[in-house]
Every structure is written in structure tokens, then in C-alpha cells.
Amino acid sequence: MNYENRKIAGLLLFIGGIECVLGIIMAEALYSGYSTSENYISDLGVGPSSVIFNSSVFLMGMLAVGTAYFIQRAFNFRLFSTMSAVTGIGAMGVGVFTEDAGVIHGVFSLITFLFAGLSAILSYKLQKPPLSYLSIVLGALSLSALALFGSGIYLGLGKGGMERMIAYPALLWAVGFGGHLIGYSQDKPKRAL
Image (cartoon, rainbow, N blue to C red; front, side):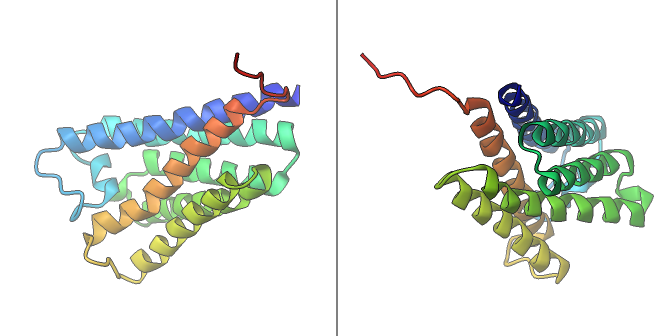
């Protein structure tokens, strides 16, 4: 049964990461004059493509909460499951409370970014090298970018570019870790003929 829980957790995380990246790309493409360098990601939530962005981020959050449930069932790893659930709740909050909602949007964004990076790092306990190392690197990159972003240091990328350096490493980790969980096999690999 743990085997199936692991695969379901992976599937939810994999789908969530992919649909969120694609949702951001579609929302950017449909938002005339949008700049990935100068606009915040959340500007997509109040622009002409807001339905796509907000529903995509909310869905990612729901899938992260579902992932947390199945990770807990598969691994009984409460700290990671809690971080994943908090990330998901944060993302759902971002999808509901758009940037024109004021401070609450910023709080949900911070929760999402912070706990996504921490989840990526903590997931090393559920993987073997080299993927465990890559998860730590992606999580650390996301958290480092969050610290720089919070300090107003954009490294020439603009505020939108630096915000993407927070979000994309975590989303790429979600796809990679989700794929790992889906592909996990309790059987020995079969030899090619």
C-alpha cells in the first residue's frame, strides 16, 4: 500500500508542477505588455489572464496538500508532509487573495516560497544521490533568491526575474521529485535483452 501512496503523491506533485509552469507561461503570453523582468509573477493574477493564473496556482496548492497526505501515508514523515501542506495552503491563498488584496497576498506568497524551498531541501531524506543533492541545491537556490528578493537585490534580473529565481527552482524540483516518486519501483529492474 505504501508503494501506491508513493506513486499517487508523485503523480499529484508532478502534475502540479507542470500545470503551474504551463499556467504561468500561458498567462504571460496572453497578457499584452507583460515583462518577465519588470512585472511580478502575481501581476498575472490581476491582469487580463487572471483566471488562468489564479486557477493554476490554486490547483497547484490543492495538489501539494494532496501530495502531503499521500507522502505521510507512504513515509510517515510528518515534518515534510507538514511543510508540503503549508506550501499548498500558501499557494491556494495566492490564488484566492490576489495582489490587489494587500498584505494578505504577500503573506501567502512568502509562505508558499519559503516552505516550497524548505520542502525541496528536506526531501533529500526521501531520495538517493544524486537526486537528493539536486533537491538540496534547488531548495537552497530558491531560498537564496527569496532572501535577495526580500532585500531588494535583483542581480540585474529585475524584480520579476528574481521572483522567478524563487519560484522556478521549486517548481522544477516538484516535477523532478514527483517523477522520482512515480518511477520508484520495489522490484529489481529487468535486464534488457
